Image (tube, rainbow, N blue to C red; front, side, top):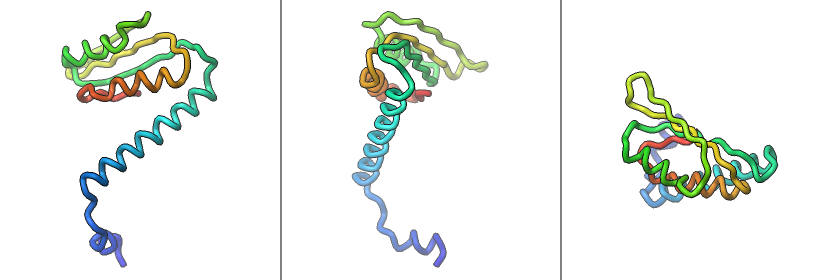
Length: 115
């Protein structure tokens, strides 16, 4: 039986199933990240966040505001066409949970990709 025939007999995934899968993937991602951070750094430490997103002033301001209570080293660079911006933020974080919390606080920023 071909792969196409196998998939034909599978029930379509509902939006609820897709949301559940996405949530599970996000949890797994943050679990792996925490494990790597615990293994590869001594805490507290200087941590570098790097983001790429469409060049929209409101989104740049959102990123800056998410770090407003921290002492940061902030840099931004624009793509050659100016369509995208990369933002680097270096700040001291007390533990892996603080890093993960910071990443989670960025999830609502349109088009943001964390590297």
